[in-house]
Image (cartoon, rainbow, N blue to C red; front, side, top):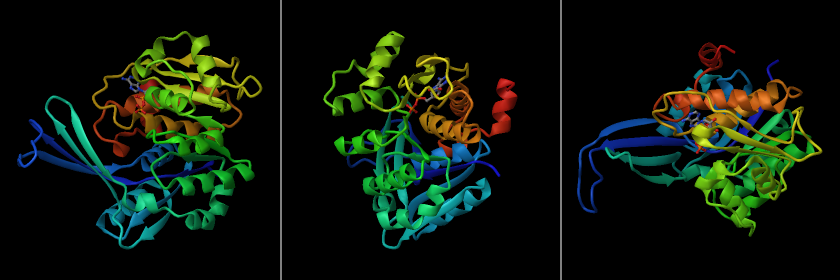
Length: 322
Ligand code: ADP
């Protein structure tokens, strides 16, 4: 049977309007509309399922047309859903305005995501305990994510945490409980700052030497840290006592060459694919899983959109001749 990954996280319906320039307050302008599935949790679950891992998604939805659309999509993607329904709350939404200059304005309506309950997580304890990897982020009720992590830890399930979007000091609890975290540069710097530690500016991070980056990672006191560096690939740092079959405690993973047109959701593609790779081959060198995640994420940037821009395993194999 395929390895199991459980993602506890958000679903948002992304609604995108492209317009020549943003309206000013009180003004109405015309634009081209598009909509698609998103939300960090769901993107990561799709990335994982599309790499062939048996993937379970635990989240919260409203009782509305957006939820019905999401359930149909999950079914067609082979994603097992364990979602709580909140009548009276909307399914999560994101209103995104993009103007020709490339700038965007975004309003997120968390809706049901913020109401994901601890009771629902506890009702799914058997699903979590049966996983090889649990994946969490910061886009649903914090207490629910924490409850899932506690159940997973007690059962020896590997806990991966993607500390995004960066929020507040409460989120450090999820970071502390994780075996592995996958921040981007901005999130990494914010985590250091939240812990009261000095950090260089996010855009200077990739230029630090490896020993300096490793030392910064170690200050977070998480077993393994993978910083995603956009077009510059990723940096891996392990605590010396747990190298996850790697030859060294820290190294860079080179980026793949792609023609990026939209990097939305690249980080989600990376985390979901990393979870799939680790669940599929838990004893393989971690560097192999990171390389595979980088391939999936890089290819996702060649298409517009979030969840549906994520490539399937066979596309990735064809493109990179794996
Ligand atoms: P986020 O979307 O969270 O900001 P990043 O921008 O760091 O995340 O991207 C995540 C991963 O996606 C990177 O580590 C890299 O593997 C891949 N990636 C992103 N942008 C590019 C690019 N332009 N070329 C190649 N790979 C990319």
